[in-house]
Image (cartoon, rainbow, N blue to C red):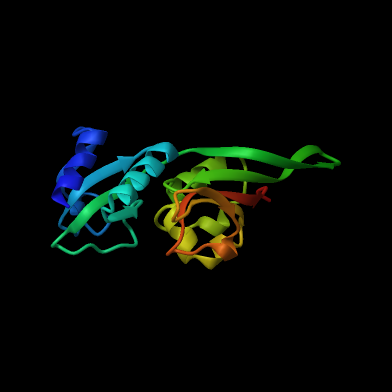
Length: 194
């Protein structure tokens, strides 16, 4: 496997893939030994490419966001640790309302990439005058939380995933499976702030 990890490092570049990187430097609890290789994905394209490469070479990989919901052994991880820092948030649809005081937003559909922290999502919603109460005091990123938080899943219209065959698909929250899917982004239906 060492040769396969070296191949990944050479393919993506030594400036992007670090060998024997301590994972304690990248997790919330500050614990965790070295990973054979460590990569930070900043875009969906980078995330899917590193995953596809690991799968093609049959190299184990671990994906995490802020590292707030994982504990990694001090012995480290034999494979490629991928820190998901995808960061795009965009309003894709707005539903309005007309009242006596004028025209306003009733709700919006917001697409959020899986590496976005819940805090950054709250900042965006606040700037758009959209409701944030469902997201307060939730640590971590969108991707990790969608697997764990049922109340968050109820706000999702659709989820873009990478499946086991490296195919990008759009699914709903009830079909989400940790063993089969890697979350790339999710579309949330968010009401206007009262």
